Length: 329
Ligand code: AMP
Ligand code: MN
Ligand code: MN
Image (cartoon, rainbow, N blue to C red):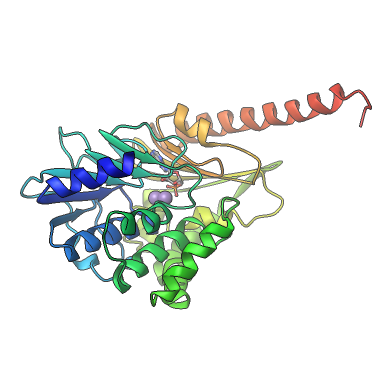
């Protein structure tokens, strides 16, 4: 059993390192804090590391002040959370492999020695809500707050199509432990600094559309002009997914003159994780991303072409199925 293997590996280790993906979202931060704090309470020595640190959005979470940006000294056991591949940890493990990976990405590459991957889970934090008690660890209030933050973030407040009655049951259990859903919801999904709203403005001005495909860009200059401090998209891709009608929205965020972060959001029923994976990234059917080498115009053209081709193939398939039906309906 994978859980027995995880339990044994943790038991045998004194110094445990925990990390998650770069530009950490609420699920990455929440899962590192939840497992990290639970292990600390059990008496283990724990280092919690996120290459890009914790953004202001999640600084209210207890334990966020303990998160470092590199491992020092080395640990006996490394646990990677919410990351579908090793590269996306941002090099914090240097030349070491992850010992344990706990994740919910359909594109997970099983890169650790022990892999617990549940693609049906709405968030890595939903898996941990199940796993932490099974490891004999305690879900106290700070752990419950971290777990609920991850679930709220990845489900965009229980809006994504992978939200199930189980997701709500897990959230309800965390509320019973004292987690305040109103405060956590507001912090994770609603309140944004002025600079974020200004940053959105640059992208919104450039919004374009071709049938159900919507896209826009954010340049390094936009970021500077807005005074936005992060290298993420200030949650804009999720906001743009509210456009209706919409098949796919793609957001291009310039990271360096020759590196672009691409984010896709798709309507339920489509699966854009394959395009992201084919370019070296990954994600879920309805939300995926990749860092693409190349200038902003080059990456934009290439990715829009691939996405348009995908939408065309889906449309043709649908028409084909309808034509093929004997009753013509
Ligand atoms: P984002 O567009 O960054 O909000 O990411 C959407 C989803 O795709 C999230 O579940 C991410 O964890 C995943 N994702 C984003 N970028 C990558 C990448 N470079 N490699 C693998 N998965 C990614
Ligand atoms: Mn994540
Ligand atoms: Mn996640």
